[in-house]
Length: 259
Image (cartoon, rainbow, N blue to C red; front, side, top):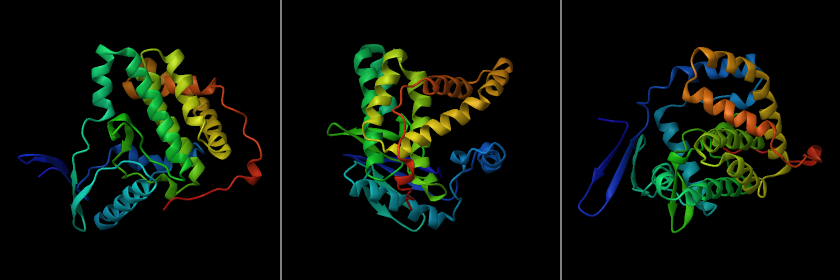
């Protein structure tokens, strides 16, 4: 009955995902309006499609990641509006939760390692759309990716979608890190080693735009400091002061779209 559910067989677990029965959060319906009013194109939501089109889009993105050499869940069966996937194993969110209590060094190293993997995704001409450690996993030591419902690169230049990826990922790093003063710069450097000049520039632009609304966010936080607001503040404050290399020769950078 659920949109996403697991099925345990005698020797393996399968995941069933059905398109078209997801109830979108209320803020998603306002996201496009906010992007226009605040002049933050990075906030443009992905197009809402029919269940069959959503299924086709997600499978196409999974194949693109797999074709570029990144681990993704394996599809055991698919129909027009549903798919059955093999279990990818423990997510990075689950692994980080365990490491936080047992091995702080490994915990921080995994956050940096995931940032480096995201950089390699971007170097391959891809973007994830909603990068979070609950959608990352490890397979044979490599960081893998899943849940490709969001496709912001279909409504904005690729480098803009990649900057959005990084900003969203740092909502996790800045708040989850045990030693943020060390780990946040290390994670950003790991991503930057693979990032294009255009993507680094767009991250600077997005961070500046986020900084403009930071006073409003802090004001709202005085009334109710929820976890999302706290993560936004922490990530924005770090990225505003981050030592990103200056972007040069932007006129020669190629804008791309991932469809």
